[in-house]
Length: 120
Image (cartoon, rainbow, N blue to C red):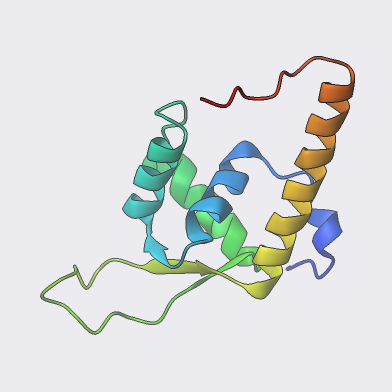
């Protein structure tokens, strides 16, 4: 039951947004996705396996991500790991969400609710 209209996927939940951001650089396995999210959020978001893999399953069903082909380097990697990557649809949804969030931040700045980051 994948939706074809990227706009209909918005707004994204924080979990889905961060998974898409983690996969924007390339394919990763589940644990690496969780590690990347924890790193990029300075530990503010820590995903347990249930949240992570439940979200991955829903994102696969929505065609936001897909399972990447099997790895050919079993010595370097556990053959049981599944790798995921963004689909072109998932990348478009991510772009639209980032545009939406940029607009929210612009409005907040106009209302002087957010200060620009200071340059060191």
